[in-house]
Image 1 (cartoon, rainbow, N blue to C red):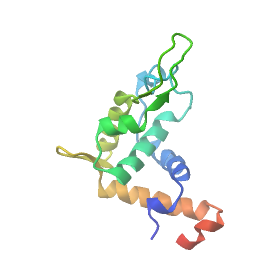
Image 2 (image 1 turned 120 degrees about the horizontal axis):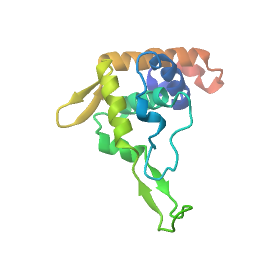
Image 3 (image 1 turned 90 degrees about the horizontal axis):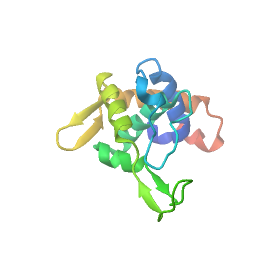
Image 4 (image 1 turned 180 degrees about the horizontal axis):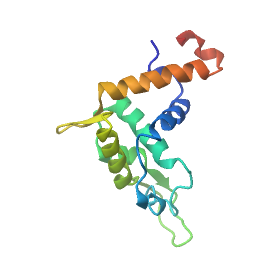
Length: 151
């Protein structure tokens, strides 16, 4: 049986984003929101919301139970310090918690993620099943000889 650990993350996230695109809807404000403090512009991808939700579902399944704060750190960026406006020391910046929280709430409404009281978010059996089903499809479509042992 193929699991989400048996396929490359980028291929799994792309396929999962295609599945989630019709199940979740991007909020109106996403065209104006930055993905983190260190960013200057909003995301330019057309399917950003579905891709971020798919990535969050995978990360919750792998690392769960996990909270918004830890996910914000994972989706953060390393600021090199200098921008076109100021010069500052290099430091780490967190990702947007609003984007993460809203996407997780939509995944909860779909029944793919649930909240473990006091611990954070975990993937539900339906979410785990969706991830494994998409992973099996991705493994069939991949033409990589090193992954043949999982088929």
